[in-house]
Image (tube, rainbow, N blue to C red; front, side):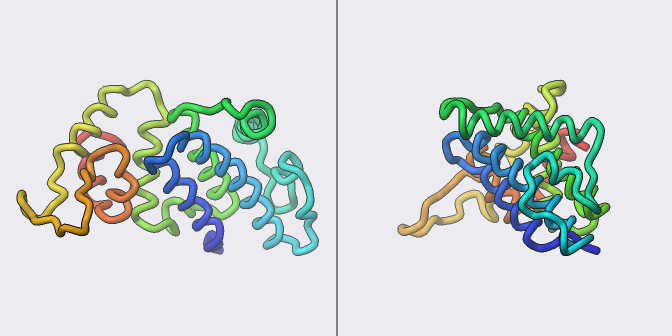
Length: 203
């Protein structure tokens, strides 16, 4: 069974915020990841058994019939939940960095793949698969050279049809390769972003 449209839509929201230009985007995307994990588990349980308890808490949602997320992934999800609770209820100033947020996004995708096998490879739109390649790159602090190469390729990529394409008076010209506009670049020009990733030797 393919991943339900509402789960894909929720993941799109997380990705859109992670690649947006809003302040504290990592904090907001991280909190949404936590919500996405719980929503995915409860949706899967409902598919498995319509009488499943949808009022249960986060921990119990991981163990619902038809779901049962265990082991290392479950421990990371529980840790993320604690961080999210602290951000929402303990300290309004608490946040996470881009790497921690990227890891939480990948963990949420693992939950989706656990509930609906191979969803990330077979059922997500091409632009989401592209976005997840970028997220995977930024989830690791081990390869700064690849990040620098990717960012350089993004800035130098040929985003426009012509070098001096005219801009209408009522339009705003943006630099697609700028980090604040990567969301738009990934959604509208995923093939160029994929090329930048490949040229930077990003898997």
